[in-house]
Amino acid sequence: MVDIQWILGVEPSKLPPEWRQAVQDLFLQETGEAYADVSVSSLPIPAWEGNMLLVDMSLYPDPLALKGLLWSLPFLDHGVRIAAFAIRSDLQGNGWGSKAWNHLMAAALAEQKEFVQLEVKAANIRAQQFYRERGLEVKSHLENYYQSGLGYMMKGPISQIHPSR
Image 1 (cartoon, rainbow, N blue to C red):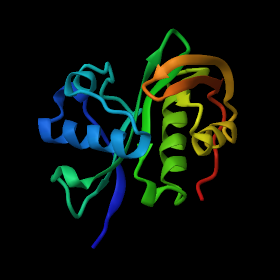
Image 2: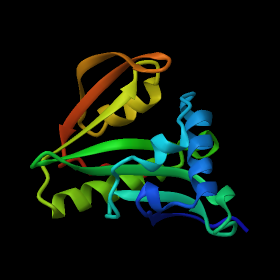
Image 3: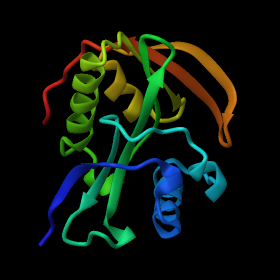
Image 4: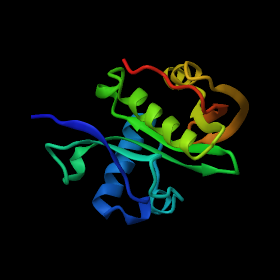
């Protein structure tokens, strides 16, 4: 029986190697970007409410349980930076992204944060629409930010709670 849910994550450096590999596989599958283990393990994502893993609890603790992640961190004095947000394509459009987003926004409001910032591939129109619906706007173009080319830096207020589908 499938039992998918968001759970709080640990710092990437504390993930077992097989879980870091599952993260690398998720990134490659969903973004087309390949990351080395050292790149994943050195991400400065703290253990906090903005560090979440989407897992199938019927498979947990097997790394095959990983279905998505939202990794963010406090940024500057009043912001939150989303470092990674990926959900397996077969689970997209079912409200999982909105649930994680709303959880992050509630946590950020509790921490008195005022804005959220992230980078997104210019070619990822679906993700950009998701962020625009939540009040983010493209603030700058990032040439060669991704291996595949152009990225956008998007930024918006932390007051946008969006209904889950």
